[in-house]
Length: 328
Image (cartoon, rainbow, N blue to C red; front, top):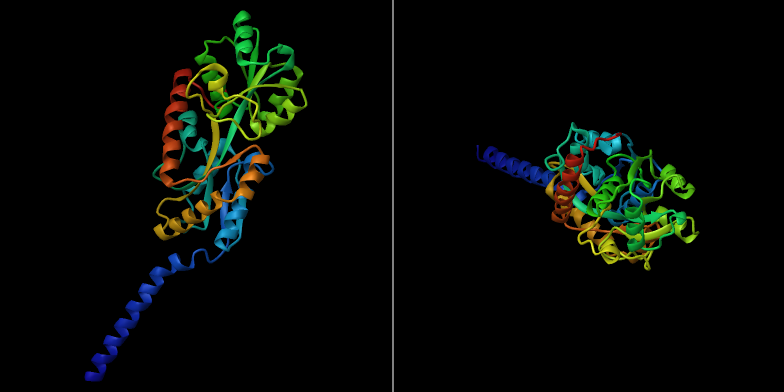
């Protein structure tokens, strides 16, 4: 009888220890296999290339391969909707764009809640815009541009990469701030819009900095201002919107953040957040991304939430007031 009690006591202790070790396993072993990161855009673009650069560095920090899976469609909503069906184990992550908070307002119906369905890990990149104009417009500064447009209302056009895109919202914000009468022309992407800008069909456009820089350097367009609060390392001679016009708080940035499905274990999130902070201090990666025209930005989860709140409020108000709908 005494032997039986001793045996059962030992067995219970062994089982408790085993359960304890099993519970700790995800925290100590993560990641034990490759991680998939979903990018909601097609391969080859700026978001894809820059995401791959950051995730390659993350893989080195974690000691596991980080594999990109592209899921383009519905201005990123296809990927956002798909992510909420994935297991919350840290092995499927999302390179979420600013569209995560814009699309529910723009599209009306999505299958996710940006705050309830995702756990923010860190910001990844900022991609600013440049207001550039056709050389034939004959202006080289914001003062000259505003004077020319006001002198000839309804004569000129500004292009966008699509209704509801951040550069479209930046254009509308700009036109409203300065009470300008300019036609807004939507294209299917930045490339065809840039072609028409160079050809003079449209006279101005907010373009991604990496797309604008070579056009400006070759003289095919003229840069007026950048949409950030600080000048860009890529274009150090170009003033900010505030410097160029005196307009305060004009900031239009396409950003991406690394997020995980809701209910991902806290130790896994902590490991990922720690790794992203280390990546943010990597000067080689920062320089590599700067050459692509984007800025490496790592942050706390709270910083991601602040970005979401800020852009949802700012762009959401504009979308509602102007009744902007995707594809219109």
